[in-house]
Length: 242
Image (cartoon, rainbow, N blue to C red; front, side, top):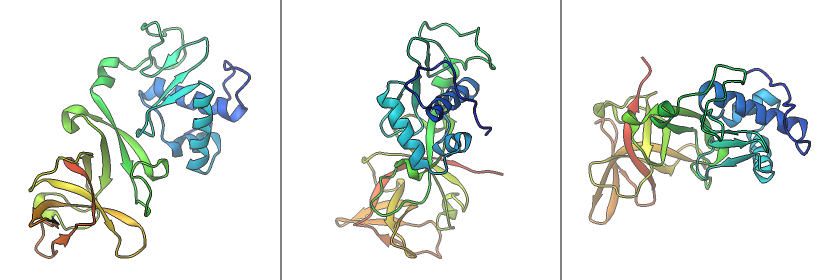
Protein backbone atom coordinates (compact mmCIF):
# COMPACT_ATOMS: atom_id res chain seq x y z
CA UNK A 1 0.00 0.00 0.00
CA UNK A 2 1.41 3.41 -0.90
CA UNK A 3 2.16 5.95 1.79
CA UNK A 4 -0.74 8.38 1.98
CA UNK A 5 -0.29 12.10 1.61
CA UNK A 6 -1.19 14.07 4.76
CA UNK A 7 -4.83 15.11 4.77
CA UNK A 8 -5.17 18.87 4.53
CA UNK A 9 -8.90 19.13 5.22
CA UNK A 10 -8.74 18.03 8.86
CA UNK A 11 -8.66 20.23 11.95
CA UNK A 12 -5.34 21.42 13.35
CA UNK A 13 -5.66 19.23 16.47
CA UNK A 14 -4.43 16.24 14.47
CA UNK A 15 -0.75 15.46 14.10
CA UNK A 16 0.57 14.87 10.58
CA UNK A 17 0.62 11.11 11.17
CA UNK A 18 -2.94 11.08 12.53
CA UNK A 19 -4.05 12.99 9.45
CA UNK A 20 -2.35 10.36 7.29
CA UNK A 21 -4.14 7.56 9.14
CA UNK A 22 -7.51 9.23 8.64
CA UNK A 23 -6.73 9.66 4.94
CA UNK A 24 -5.66 6.01 4.56
CA UNK A 25 -8.90 4.79 6.15
CA UNK A 26 -10.98 7.21 4.11
CA UNK A 27 -9.31 6.14 0.85
CA UNK A 28 -9.79 2.45 1.64
CA UNK A 29 -13.46 2.85 2.52
CA UNK A 30 -14.06 4.85 -0.64
CA UNK A 31 -12.19 2.41 -2.89
CA UNK A 32 -12.83 -0.97 -1.24
CA UNK A 33 -15.82 -0.52 1.04
CA UNK A 34 -13.98 -1.53 4.22
CA UNK A 35 -11.31 -0.34 6.62
CA UNK A 36 -7.70 -1.49 6.11
CA UNK A 37 -6.07 -3.79 8.65
CA UNK A 38 -3.79 -2.47 11.39
CA UNK A 39 -0.80 -3.82 9.47
CA UNK A 40 -1.90 -2.12 6.24
CA UNK A 41 -2.39 1.20 8.02
CA UNK A 42 1.03 0.87 9.63
CA UNK A 43 2.70 0.16 6.28
CA UNK A 44 0.98 3.17 4.72
CA UNK A 45 2.03 5.67 7.41
CA UNK A 46 5.38 4.22 8.47
CA UNK A 47 4.46 2.56 11.78
CA UNK A 48 6.07 -0.86 12.24
CA UNK A 49 4.05 -1.89 15.30
CA UNK A 50 0.33 -2.70 15.13
CA UNK A 51 0.15 -1.64 18.78
CA UNK A 52 1.27 1.85 17.72
CA UNK A 53 -1.44 1.92 15.06
CA UNK A 54 -4.04 0.79 17.60
CA UNK A 55 -2.92 3.55 19.96
CA UNK A 56 -3.26 6.19 17.25
CA UNK A 57 -6.75 4.91 16.39
CA UNK A 58 -7.69 5.20 20.07
CA UNK A 59 -6.45 8.81 20.10
CA UNK A 60 -8.45 9.56 16.95
CA UNK A 61 -11.53 8.04 18.58
CA UNK A 62 -11.07 10.26 21.66
CA UNK A 63 -10.77 13.29 19.38
CA UNK A 64 -14.03 12.34 17.69
CA UNK A 65 -12.60 11.52 14.27
CA UNK A 66 -13.68 7.90 14.25
CA UNK A 67 -15.63 5.32 16.17
CA UNK A 68 -14.58 1.70 16.61
CA UNK A 69 -16.98 -1.18 17.17
CA UNK A 70 -16.04 -3.33 20.18
CA UNK A 71 -14.77 -6.77 19.18
CA UNK A 72 -14.42 -5.78 15.51
CA UNK A 73 -10.84 -4.47 15.19
CA UNK A 74 -11.21 -3.38 11.60
CA UNK A 75 -14.57 -1.66 11.94
CA UNK A 76 -14.26 2.12 11.97
CA UNK A 77 -16.40 5.09 10.98
CA UNK A 78 -14.54 8.27 10.05
CA UNK A 79 -16.20 11.42 11.32
CA UNK A 80 -14.58 14.53 9.85
CA UNK A 81 -15.85 17.46 11.95
CA UNK A 82 -18.04 19.77 9.89
CA UNK A 83 -17.76 17.61 6.79
CA UNK A 84 -18.95 14.08 5.99
CA UNK A 85 -19.16 10.71 7.69
CA UNK A 86 -17.44 7.77 6.04
CA UNK A 87 -18.75 4.28 6.59
CA UNK A 88 -20.22 2.94 3.38
CA UNK A 89 -18.95 5.72 1.12
CA UNK A 90 -22.11 7.76 1.68
CA UNK A 91 -22.15 11.28 3.22
CA UNK A 92 -24.45 12.01 6.16
CA UNK A 93 -27.09 13.34 3.77
CA UNK A 94 -27.48 9.80 2.38
CA UNK A 95 -26.61 10.91 -1.17
CA UNK A 96 -23.46 9.86 -3.03
CA UNK A 97 -20.57 12.34 -2.75
CA UNK A 98 -20.21 12.66 -6.51
CA UNK A 99 -17.93 15.67 -6.23
CA UNK A 100 -15.13 13.72 -4.53
CA UNK A 101 -12.15 12.20 -6.24
CA UNK A 102 -11.84 8.45 -6.45
CA UNK A 103 -13.87 5.60 -7.89
CA UNK A 104 -17.04 6.55 -6.04
CA UNK A 105 -19.11 5.08 -3.23
CA UNK A 106 -19.68 1.41 -2.65
CA UNK A 107 -23.32 0.44 -2.86
CA UNK A 108 -24.89 0.02 0.61
CA UNK A 109 -26.79 -2.96 -0.80
CA UNK A 110 -23.50 -4.67 -1.62
CA UNK A 111 -22.02 -3.89 1.79
CA UNK A 112 -25.18 -5.15 3.52
CA UNK A 113 -24.56 -8.54 1.96
CA UNK A 114 -21.00 -8.80 3.28
CA UNK A 115 -19.67 -9.80 6.67
CA UNK A 116 -16.27 -8.47 7.78
CA UNK A 117 -14.55 -11.54 9.20
CA UNK A 118 -11.26 -11.13 11.14
CA UNK A 119 -8.57 -13.67 10.24
CA UNK A 120 -6.98 -14.58 13.57
CA UNK A 121 -3.40 -15.79 13.89
CA UNK A 122 -1.66 -17.74 16.65
CA UNK A 123 -2.98 -16.86 20.10
CA UNK A 124 -0.58 -16.23 22.98
CA UNK A 125 -1.57 -17.48 26.43
CA UNK A 126 -4.11 -15.21 28.08
CA UNK A 127 -4.60 -12.97 25.06
CA UNK A 128 -8.19 -12.34 23.96
CA UNK A 129 -9.03 -14.09 20.71
CA UNK A 130 -9.80 -10.78 18.98
CA UNK A 131 -6.94 -8.71 20.39
CA UNK A 132 -5.72 -6.30 17.71
CA UNK A 133 -2.30 -7.96 17.72
CA UNK A 134 -3.86 -11.31 16.82
CA UNK A 135 -5.81 -10.13 13.78
CA UNK A 136 -3.81 -10.65 10.60
CA UNK A 137 -6.43 -9.42 8.14
CA UNK A 138 -10.15 -8.79 7.85
CA UNK A 139 -11.88 -10.51 4.94
CA UNK A 140 -15.26 -9.40 3.50
CA UNK A 141 -17.29 -12.56 2.87
CA UNK A 142 -20.84 -13.03 1.54
CA UNK A 143 -23.41 -13.49 4.29
CA UNK A 144 -25.07 -16.11 2.10
CA UNK A 145 -21.95 -18.19 2.69
CA UNK A 146 -21.14 -17.45 6.34
CA UNK A 147 -24.37 -16.07 7.82
CA UNK A 148 -24.58 -13.45 10.55
CA UNK A 149 -23.21 -13.26 14.06
CA UNK A 150 -19.84 -12.74 15.69
CA UNK A 151 -17.56 -14.39 13.13
CA UNK A 152 -13.84 -15.08 13.01
CA UNK A 153 -11.69 -17.02 10.55
CA UNK A 154 -8.90 -19.46 11.40
CA UNK A 155 -6.37 -21.22 9.18
CA UNK A 156 -6.37 -25.01 9.52
CA UNK A 157 -3.01 -26.63 10.28
CA UNK A 158 -2.65 -30.41 10.03
CA UNK A 159 -4.69 -33.30 8.70
CA UNK A 160 -6.75 -34.38 11.69
CA UNK A 161 -10.04 -33.47 9.94
CA UNK A 162 -9.43 -34.74 6.41
CA UNK A 163 -12.31 -37.23 6.55
CA UNK A 164 -14.62 -34.27 7.23
CA UNK A 165 -13.29 -32.54 4.07
CA UNK A 166 -11.28 -30.03 6.14
CA UNK A 167 -7.64 -30.15 5.09
CA UNK A 168 -4.33 -28.49 5.91
CA UNK A 169 -4.30 -24.90 4.66
CA UNK A 170 -8.08 -24.46 4.56
CA UNK A 171 -9.75 -21.54 6.31
CA UNK A 172 -12.71 -22.13 8.58
CA UNK A 173 -15.22 -19.45 9.52
CA UNK A 174 -16.36 -19.80 13.11
CA UNK A 175 -19.45 -18.27 14.67
CA UNK A 176 -18.69 -17.50 18.31
CA UNK A 177 -21.45 -19.10 20.35
CA UNK A 178 -21.93 -21.28 23.41
CA UNK A 179 -24.93 -23.32 22.27
CA UNK A 180 -22.85 -26.28 21.10
CA UNK A 181 -24.31 -29.75 20.57
CA UNK A 182 -22.74 -33.17 20.15
CA UNK A 183 -21.64 -33.63 16.56
CA UNK A 184 -20.97 -29.95 15.89
CA UNK A 185 -17.59 -29.15 14.36
CA UNK A 186 -16.04 -26.53 16.62
CA UNK A 187 -12.92 -24.43 17.03
CA UNK A 188 -11.37 -24.61 20.48
CA UNK A 189 -8.38 -23.15 22.27
CA UNK A 190 -6.03 -25.77 23.73
CA UNK A 191 -2.55 -25.74 25.26
CA UNK A 192 0.20 -25.91 22.64
CA UNK A 193 2.44 -28.97 22.63
CA UNK A 194 5.45 -26.91 21.58
CA UNK A 195 5.22 -23.66 23.57
CA UNK A 196 3.48 -21.91 26.45
CA UNK A 197 1.02 -20.36 24.01
CA UNK A 198 -2.46 -21.56 23.33
CA UNK A 199 -3.49 -22.56 19.84
CA UNK A 200 -6.74 -23.07 18.03
CA UNK A 201 -7.81 -26.50 16.87
CA UNK A 202 -10.79 -27.69 14.82
CA UNK A 203 -12.48 -30.91 15.91
CA UNK A 204 -15.94 -32.45 16.40
CA UNK A 205 -17.48 -31.71 19.80
CA UNK A 206 -18.67 -34.58 21.99
CA UNK A 207 -19.74 -34.51 25.62
CA UNK A 208 -19.88 -37.87 27.42
CA UNK A 209 -20.42 -38.47 31.17
CA UNK A 210 -19.69 -34.84 31.97
CA UNK A 211 -16.43 -34.75 30.01
CA UNK A 212 -15.76 -32.85 26.80
CA UNK A 213 -13.94 -34.63 23.99
CA UNK A 214 -12.62 -33.17 20.75
CA UNK A 215 -12.86 -35.86 18.09
CA UNK A 216 -10.66 -35.87 14.96
CA UNK A 217 -11.81 -37.18 11.60
CA UNK A 218 -8.67 -39.11 10.74
CA UNK A 219 -7.92 -42.57 12.20
CA UNK A 220 -4.27 -41.57 12.61
CA UNK A 221 -5.22 -39.10 15.37
CA UNK A 222 -6.61 -39.77 18.84
CA UNK A 223 -9.50 -37.94 20.54
CA UNK A 224 -8.52 -35.18 22.95
CA UNK A 225 -10.05 -34.85 26.40
CA UNK A 226 -10.83 -31.15 26.51
CA UNK A 227 -12.44 -30.33 29.84
CA UNK A 228 -10.06 -27.37 30.18
CA UNK A 229 -10.34 -26.24 26.57
CA UNK A 230 -12.08 -23.02 25.62
CA UNK A 231 -14.73 -23.62 22.97
CA UNK A 232 -14.57 -20.63 20.63
CA UNK A 233 -17.63 -21.49 18.56
CA UNK A 234 -19.12 -23.57 15.78
CA UNK A 235 -17.60 -23.89 12.32
CA UNK A 236 -20.09 -22.55 9.77
CA UNK A 237 -18.05 -22.52 6.57
CA UNK A 238 -14.84 -23.91 5.06
CA UNK A 239 -12.86 -21.99 2.44
CA UNK A 240 -10.14 -23.45 0.24
CA UNK A 241 -7.74 -21.94 -2.28
CA UNK A 242 -7.38 -24.08 -5.41
